[in-house]
Image (tube, rainbow, N blue to C red):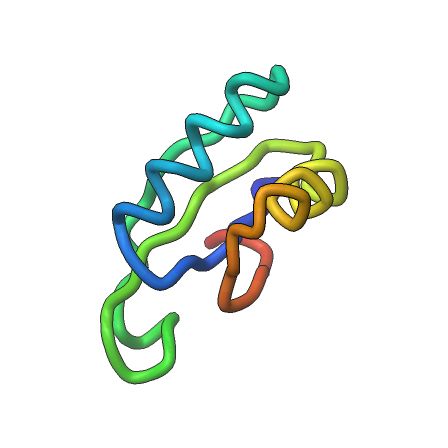
Length: 72
């Protein structure tokens, strides 16, 4: 199952993707429509697995995320 970590901007999503890649975790930047976000469009990274490890890594790098969810 795909998982989604929602971030505040495309810049944050791209930075998170680069950090995770350095740690051997594949992710993809994805635009999140307003209906899935909180009233406005946002960006996130899509992960196939390793979401717990990814969250820990992003926390270590002080990447703030807005939430996480199962992807559509």
